[in-house]
Image (cartoon, rainbow, N blue to C red; front, top):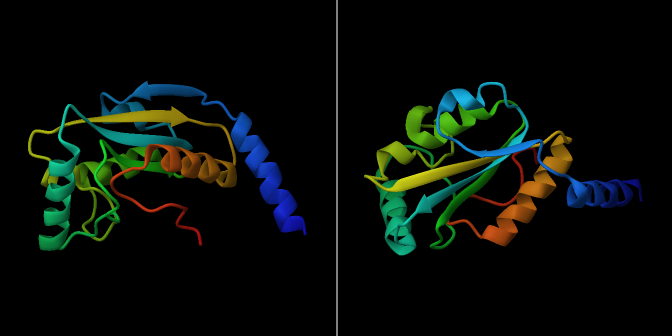
Length: 151
C-alpha cells in the first residue's frame, strides 16, 4: 500500500514543517518572488454575519466565479499557491479574470478592513496542501473549499 505509506510520510512532514517566513501583507510587490505559500484572508473588526451575507449577495448577482460559501466567520479564506502568490492574491483582491474562482474583494467589501497573512514554506505541493487543509480545518473560513485543485 505505497499510496498510504506516502500519505502518512507526507502527514508527518506537514506536522513538523515550519514557515520560512511569515508576515502580514502590506503591498502586492512583497509577493512577487514567493512561490510556495499559504495565505489567510481575515476581516478585522467586522461583523462576520454581515460580511457573509454581503458576499452571498455579491455571488448571487455577479457574473464572476466566486469561492464556495461555507458559514459566517472572521476568517474569510485559507488558500495556498505553488506557482506564484502574487497573481493569486491579485485575483482575490478583485484584479483577476472574472472566470477565476476567488473572493473578488474590491467588488463587494465596501470599506471592510481586510488582512492577508502569508506563510512561506519550502515543502512539496502535497505537504503544502496538507498544511493548508489543517489550517482550514482549524480556522473554519467563511468561504472556499477544502482540498487542492489538482484532483
